[in-house]
Each structure stands twice: as structure tokens, then as C-alpha cells.
Length: 96
Image (cartoon, rainbow, N blue to C red):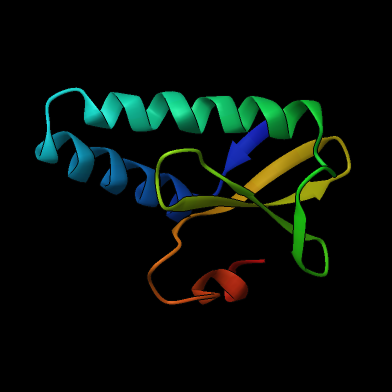
């Protein structure tokens, strides 16, 4: 399935990458690698992950405290948020 990110989700991804890269050279890229593996799983098995709200699911990213919040829109997966799991819960609800 095709995957797209809402602009706010892309901004969250960019911010997380930059923050991890500032913590240690290469750590941002390790975050992106883990995120990419999670995105591939979502694309292959979109209904595998926990349903958070009506039509919204969450895939946890290995090694990092982030979840990919997404919905399935016919033949496309829309990433609503790349959410830090220790921050404001459910802040992304208004995006769906």
C-alpha cells in the first residue's frame, strides 16, 4: 500500500531526526532506519497493529519511544503523527 504523511507528521519526524542526530552522530539515522522498518511492516500488514481510536492505529518503533499513528484510507495509509510516547497523549486526535 502507498503511504503518505500529513505535513505535521513529517515535521515531527524531521524534529525527532534532528534531535537524535544532535545527541550523537548517526543516532538520527538509526532512528530513521527503525522508523523505515516499522513503515514497511505497516505497508505489509496495515491491520496488524493496535487500534487507538475508530479508524486509527499505532505501530511502536523499536528502540525509540515513538509510535507511528496512522489511518487506512481505501488503498492508502496516512500517517497522522510520529508521536513521542512520553509526551502529551492523544494530542493528534484532532488530525484525523
